Amino acid sequence: VHLNLPFREPFFEKNEAEKSIDLLLPPKTNCYVHFAISRKILPKKEILELIESRPESGILSIGRVPSNSLDSLRKLAEELGWPVFADVTSGLRLGNNCSNRITYYDQLLHDDLISSNWDIEAVWHIGFPPTSKRWLTRWEQTPPSQMVWIADHSERHDQSHNFRWIIEADITEFCEHLVHELRLDKRSAVNRSKTQKWLQASEKAGDLIEKHFSANSENEKINEFALVRRLTQIIPETHGFFIGNSLPVRAVDMVGSEKGADIPTALNRGASGIDGLIASACGYSSGMQKPVTLLIGDLSALHDLNSFKLLTDSPEPVLLVLLNNHGGGIFSFLPVARQTDIFEPFFAAPHDYNFRKVSSMFNLNYFNPGSISAFETDYSKAIQANKSAVIEIISEREKNPQYLESLRQKLVKSVFESSS
Image (cartoon, rainbow, N blue to C red; front, side, top):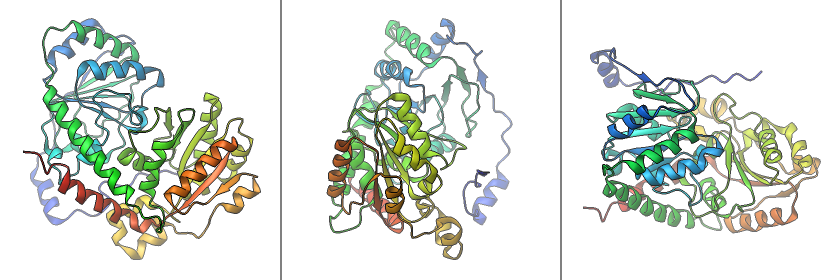
């Protein structure tokens, strides 16, 4: 029995000043949400109301959506002209096939960057909630005047309670009708300068991130974030990409490259936690009838050891890229990591295991690269062998927070240094 219990937010005690503010603030009693009547196709009247009420600029935010809606979403992104925040679960975060996409929006929302305070007049979010904690926090702390959530289901996922317009409709149909009406609309309501500002900032951030990760020394242990970035650049277009929960999905969302192939992407989000990810990836490969690259952490692999047999039996190759930092790496980023007496035994869950003998037991090719270039070579060999394999990367989770903090400082210093 697997129990997935959410921790309170934030995962540490409030200080006295924050408690005082909570006491002074009155409770919210005026939250009014307009729910559009659930229909597969939204009435033209409501689509026109949405178009006419839109401000000059906003953000088109895209979460997990059905894969058959991606083409219509690309058309909407181009026609609407707003900056696009495409979550890693959307299928539009990687590759370079989405107009106006702000690839590194998560990094641009760091508190110390001026872009975190840029005015946003509207958010139209489509699909399931985003992965980025910084984007979710922006919804909660500084919500724009217009917030619209479009989904093909009636589940309530707005934890901010700031979305006042909820539309339930088929996403493909919604986008196609919206694009049609936008093309007929005579009002020029797009502030292209704001979109360009976001695009230029994201491009600068991408260049800086590339330089930061390229500096990962060949004689040091591989950094997980540098590995993830390089992986997203070299996955072949013939592969699907299945991403594990916890650190892998956040790493791809934060620093995944836009310079790789436009590949189908899938992952489990929600109550599934880190269980059954290898089995899910094998099922994903079977459903697509094509090879899959699976990126997961060591605890996820330990929780699904039985599924190594599925890797062996998979009709299509499933290449397991396994980030082994000997414990729960994601918790190193939380304030609880400073409480060393409880952090290591109860959260990091340290271990000394590796997966060489497990791979051998299931007759899987095994690689253990010690550098980024060695990983590229081994990954290429695994692809050419045309059978499932395990590529285990040993890393040091203690260095991840410092590595990302160093990147943040470079972003703060460099991305907007030439801005007026």
